[in-house]
Length: 265
Image 1 (spheres, rainbow, N blue to C red):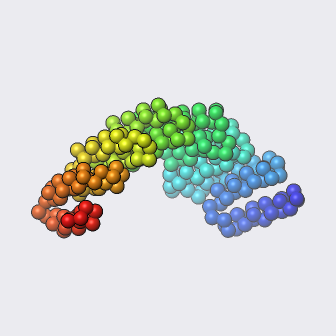
Image 2 (cartoon, one colour):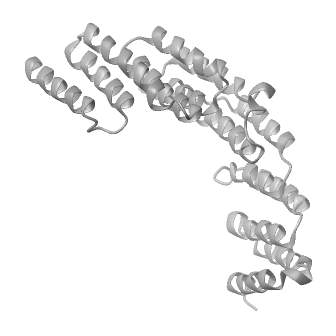
Image 3 (cartoon, rainbow, N blue to C red):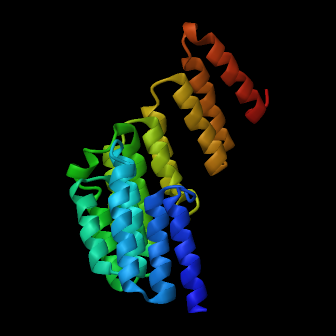
């Protein structure tokens, strides 16, 4: 059986060299994990991992986000199947670069991956919290910031079970929220919980932040869609329609038709 597996893995390596399995670096790192798990051949596995680390740099020389994302994938494979300390050293490069694309997958793996334990979850929490510090948030485009913060809060709440820490981060999201869509995004995080009052409070803030008739109309619809509060939704949408300007007649007609579909005449 062992010899059969070895031949299969040798064949797969040749196919990788021929470019038959997509991104070489990722395919090779996955093979390295199987080589170690199936054959306990640490020398071969290490060579494969080392080659995948060299390849990932060559493959993504022009795109740092993809480079760090794929590097994180290799680090996760090394962490799960081969050498945790080596994986942490690789991850240090990603963390030092403050690259969120690469940091998240590694933190997720520590929090809820196949090798997750009490120590890795503690490490995951440290990493998640680090990514919402100002020096990291400053690297994220403004229109992606709230999504990132709420995602981190959700990871800490669901994957790590730390509700208090998650709530602190949700509060941070609120402090960084600037638009109606920002407040709606925070509210969506609580739709499937028992915190309907919390959802409403964020939707109310979204309503106050709505800068145009279209924005206010979209907020109004969410009262109906998420809170099943048709009366409030209807009142907000009526107010929204009154906000459309003279040069927005076409948009206003579209939303009037939408109003009829949702609320009737």
